[in-house]
Amino acid sequence: MLPADYVFGIAVALVVAFNFYLGPRIEREHVAMQWGPSGEPTWYAPKWLAMWGMLAFMVAVRLLIWLASTYAPQSVHGVELGIVIFSVIAVGSHLFVLMKARAVR
Image 1: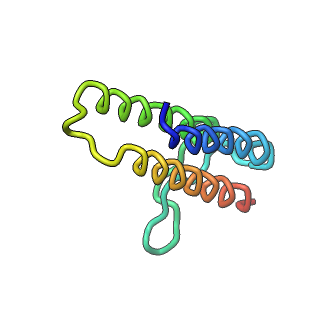
Image 2: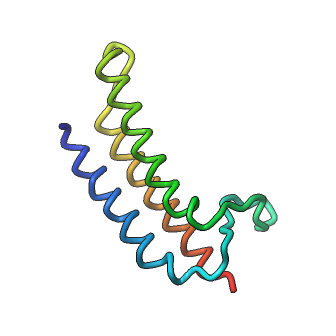
């Protein structure tokens, strides 16, 4: 286990906490997932997918990083930094999507 996995674990815990805290506060059944240059949403996802899909995506990316570093270590560089940066960006973007969804009435 890498020291960066502690950051990843904290990120996963934050995503779960945000889902449980902000999920009930989102009134709509669909959540905007991407916004265009004009600030209008370009596509929506079901609320459950927007919330729990991020967790599945994070675990899948971490599994992919582990597979690459185990079976092709010569092709992988900066694993720890990559995990930390990915964790921070994933939590930040997830919080942004949930906060925007909560604000929509």
